[in-house]
Image (cartoon, rainbow, N blue to C red; front, side, top):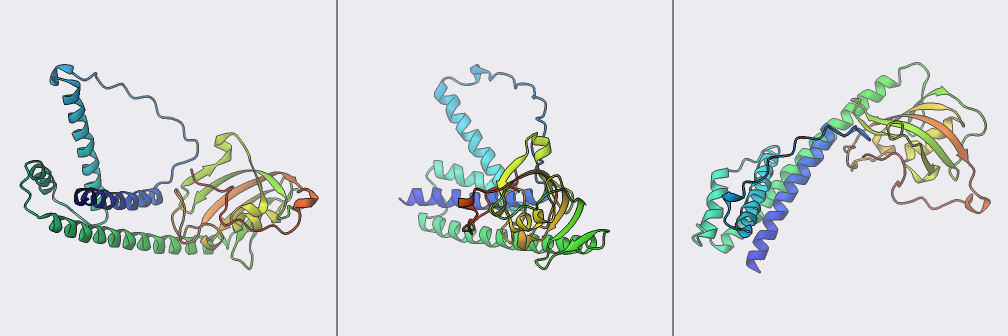
Length: 283
């Protein structure tokens, strides 16, 4: 059980560091939807079988190489959190463990890893809070600048919108199903979702998405076009989602293609879903 604990704790610690830095990477560059696939890389040369005496030898080497790459990546990711571990000491620890001559007792190993896990968690949390504050500040400035543009209106909730084309007919209601094409970006222009590049409009019930969409689309009618600038409180808030960092102000260009009235049985006040399940979503 002690060995299992040590392995599990180490894996958990490395995972925390990797997950934290992956979140930071997503904040820096969210991938565009349906991005063109890169050209296929040339296949690597076949392994020289003469290097290994058996399949088991090759499997053992492959396992070691895989573990080494994982640990190397973990060390690099932890450096982004301000934690720099000595690679030579890591290798020495592995070698000593195989030779059964560890410089630390099992209890010392467990205590050291527990302390290290706490450092990683604290560093990751501090970094995420720092980035969230920076995102909030950038969003505040972007919204203040956008509010000065011609034709921009601001609602009591803080939503900003600019109608490009009003459309015709009745405006959608909460219980209606709408069909839209849209592009979603962060305030720096990073695109995180785009139905145009996917080549397929999105259909969803209006009260089943983030509040900024539910409110914003009511300002146009079928055939209309609108730009929505949504504060984090009306989007994904302090948590964020993959591709959309915490405290992000979101910018959407939306085209309302169709409005489908809900059947009478569904027009009664529906219970709001706990989380938005439809657009907008990050890829």
